[in-house]
Length: 117
Image (cartoon, rainbow, N blue to C red; front, top):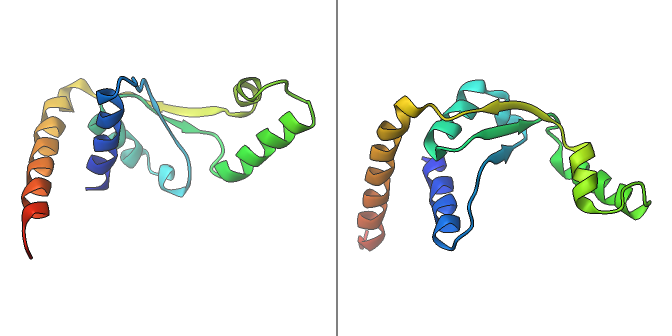
């Protein structure tokens, strides 16, 4: 499951001392409320959907505004231009279920990666 691969990446951040307090999402796949909630449940952190799906264009606009001196620094530009649409909180009642499935996923991955198929 793709979400477990993302969770592995989030775990690596934790292992090197970088705490992730929320995950921001954008793009076409974020149109599904069910999918967004599933991510929050699996990652056990809030998942935040931004208002704009076209994040590449928004990033270019942010940089253009900095270059045109509309904003003095990137953080100010982001604070003004990136809007939150929806925040999905992880459901505590599902935490153990997804942790169990995640451990199975990791174990299966280890077995398959050692396989000589």
